[in-house]
Amino acid sequence: MLNVWTKSSYSTSSGPDCVEVATPDRRHVFVRDSKNRTGPRLDLTSSAWAAFLPYASRR
Image (cartoon, rainbow, N blue to C red; front, side, top):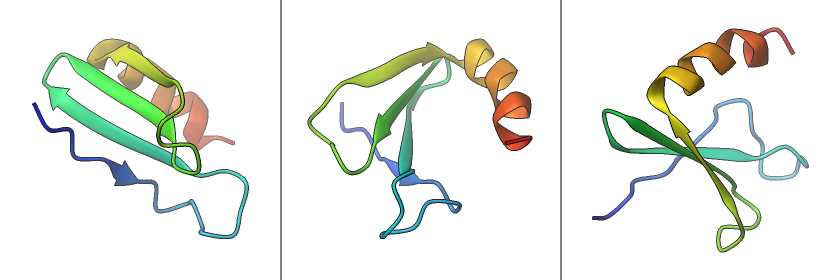
């Protein structure tokens, strides 16, 4: 399965905070650092991601 990664609109190419997200299916969300694409990634359930988004949007 090919994951399509989407970069956050709040991330810039020059900033230190670059996040990419992929949704391989309806139940999972992958999160990684776009500056270290071969590094570790977070594998979250869709419900955990949905619970995290309101917190992240306040930052």
